[in-house]
Structures are given as C-alpha cells and as structure tokens.
Length: 333
Ligand code: FAQ
Image 1 (spheres, rainbow, N blue to C red):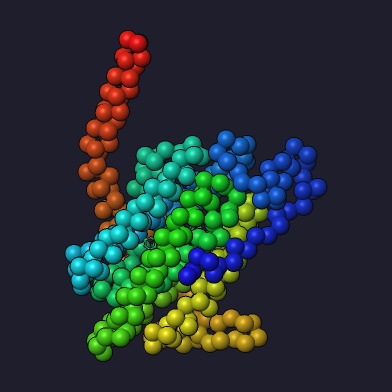
Image 2 (image 1 turned 90 degrees about the horizontal axis):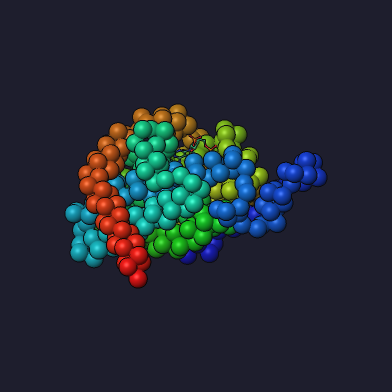
C-alpha cells in the first residue's frame, strides 16, 4: 500500500562547471544517478555522513524492538502474538542489513555499538516513549511504521548503493508492519467503547512524537542541504512530514479517531493539511537523552551487549578453529 505511493523526489544536484575539474567526477556521478559503491572514490565527508545516518538508522531498528517486545507476552491472542513476534524479528533483520551496509564504509559493528552505548550517536527519538497499552502497538505500526516508510521509500533511490538496496526489502516489510498496526487500530475502533477510548488515547500520545520523527524543520536541519546535494536525502524533513500528515488524517477519519491538533485543517489553496506548532523543546530534549525512556533503552542495549560477549567470543574461536583446519587440510593436500 504505502511503498508504491511515495514519490521519490529525485532532483538535480549542482552546477558542475563551477567546480575545479578534479572535483567534478563525484558530483557528476551523483548527478547522473550512478550509484556510489564501496570501492569507489568518495569524499570523506560523504562517507562520514553515511556512516552517521546508516548507523543511526540501524540502532533505531534495534532499539525500536524494545517498546514492542514489551507486549509479546501480553498480546491479546495467539495470532496477534505470532504476528507481533514476526514483526519484531523483521526489525532485527533491518538492523542487520543496515549494520552491514554501514560496514561497507569501513566501520565495524563493534565500533558502532560502542558509539551508541557511549551516547556518541543517536537513534530515533520515537523509541524513547513508553508502550502503555495494547493500542500502542497498533499506533506504532500505523503511525511509526507509516512515518518510517514515508522517509525510507526515497532512501531506496539514494546515491549509496548498499544503503539503497537494503532499503528496498526493508520498505516491503515496513508496508506489512504498517498494515498490521492499522488492523489492530481497526479492531479496537470497532470494539467496545473502552477499546475505542484506548485507541484514541494511543493516538493522542503517539501523534506528535510521530510527526517529530522526521527531524527538525528544514530551517533548523543542519545536515539537509549537504545530504540533498549528495542525493542521500531526496525529500526534505518538512516535505516528508507534510506527506505523512496528508496521508494519515483520512486514515484517522476512517477509524473515527480525532487527531490531537486543534489547528489541523485542510487548506484548499495549498492542497495540504495545515497543522499546529510542533513542540521542538520536547524533540530536542528527547534527542539529547532526556525523553521518558532514554536511560532504560540504553541500559537494555548495554546489558544485551554484555550478556552476548561469550557468544561473540565463542563464534570467533570457532571461526579461528575452522580456518586453521582448512589451512591444515590445504597443506596436507
Ligand atoms: N531522532 O540535520 P538533521 C523505524 C538528529 S526507523 C533522533 O535533519 P539528518 C523502523 C540528527 O541525527 C526510524 N535524532 O539530520 C521501525 C542530527 O543529529 P546528529 C529511523 C534525530 O540526518 C518502526 C540532528 O538531529 N529512521 O522507525 C531525529 O539530515 C517501528 C539534526 O537533524 C531513520 O533513521 C530523530 N527523529 O536527518 C522500527 C531513517 N531527527 O546526527 C521499529 C534514516 C533528526 O548531527 C518499530 N535517517 N535527528 O547528532 C534519516 O532519514 C535522517 O537521518 C533523518 C534526520 C531524517 C532522521
């Protein structure tokens, strides 16, 4: 549903003639939509930007499993439990594709995890909010996966090959996730008044954090201009946010739910919904580590990393033994 609907927004990059000849090759490739591959020459700043964004994205997928994992044991039926477990497993897979894509840029997974645990890199603000009721699982699928798809479809066409290719499969799976969330919301909205009230409460709490997920306004976004020039970003934070609002409002109407924004109104001149002011103080507090669940999320990741140390050690020892056996066999032959 979603994956096919999002315009990828490719744009021209810059005036190549204005650059010294030695610096034209890279932007010319970008301009011609030739993918940049790991072995290609690339400006160091391009590499660093990708490492930052892709690892932040990977960490988000992994940390994003935690709010939902909280509900595996409490899902209301066996079927819902199985669906939720499959979704959470998908998110783990997304994290792995993305860590692998970042590794092609010469950064190790250990280093990326170290940076996350040391608070040097971010993960998505949205995963610092708690999941209080089952309806929150519906709201996450509907809104958070819906917002993630809106942002990620253009990334399938971004300039870095391994990232773009990883995003194709991720987007297909996110489409399924969005539908399962909407399905939970439909069931709750067609249920008892108490269930519908629970769905409304989840929308009330998840709406604004979902709108914030797209990042700061274009005027405040520090990386956007350069990332757009490199075709890492094909649509701006505000463009994507507007598309998300436009697409989601009719869905809320279909569910019979009210979006918690008194200023939300269709603007026929713009052909878009106008919406109210975003609480940027809240956004910046959350990304600086002061959201409701930041500390808890990092503690869980740290424990998982520490508890898994013996598995990594065993896997390395096993790989070393196998390599030694292969060498011995080659020498004997
Ligand atoms: N949260 O200059 P910009 C998902 C930071 S996946 C935290 O605009 P940029 C799947 C930004 O890093 C969700 N930090 O930055 C799922 C920068 O700080 P830095 C993740 C944020 O990179 C669903 C500073 O603010 N998706 O949900 C956020 O050009 C359900 C200035 O911002 C991706 O990562 C934020 N929301 O644009 C899983 C997509 N926004 O790094 C489980 C790929 C901004 O200088 C369950 N990433 N910041 O310290 C992107 O598209 C971009 O990186 C943006 C930010 C759009 C997120």
